[in-house]
Image (tube, rainbow, N blue to C red; front, side, top):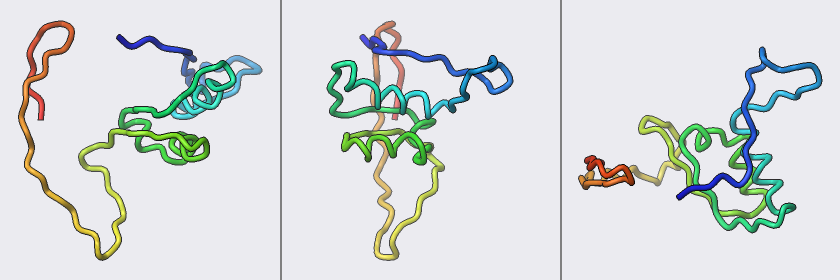
Length: 109
């Protein structure tokens, strides 16, 4: 079971009221992660989906700054720079069945 510790709503720039400060989707959880230790929570590692995994500038840098471990998803077509001596590994995909809490079996790779 996942229970949110803290939540904050994302607001479109066009919907902000006077005095509100705009925060991008990655900036919201970055701020929450910064604030959790002040509220008594100890964070060792964070998992995030691809929207956050591809926003290095203002989300992943928080974990680097705080010295925290993180694992993030990235899109299958996400590009990256590699050193000339590095090579891309092409491992075989493994098929397995996953059964989430709703009981409906699904095949995943």
